[in-house]
Image (cartoon, helix red, strand yellow):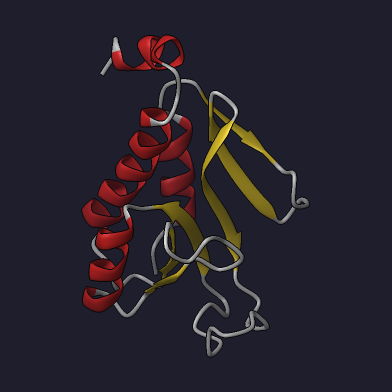
Length: 131
């Protein structure tokens, strides 16, 4: 099983990233300059429309290019449309160990950069300068 703590640390080490709990203590929300790029929570199995795939596994919601989102869902059974999110622009990644760590990290990086790319040039400057 994938270690959710590794991914939590990976996200927190990104520039200008903060951790917040606006949806309650059981949902970690990762933000870059106040804009959400990921969530991390333990699936309960009661999530509607997921066929209980999430039960007992940590799950991440990550922002994604709509075309890539569909491709990732086709490749990985553990990537599903974003739970409680805009399903075209967000994927839920079920951390059940079936997706290679490097691929999960690539998806995190893409989510982070998608959010950064929507910021003003001034907001982007302090991040892009260090990448």
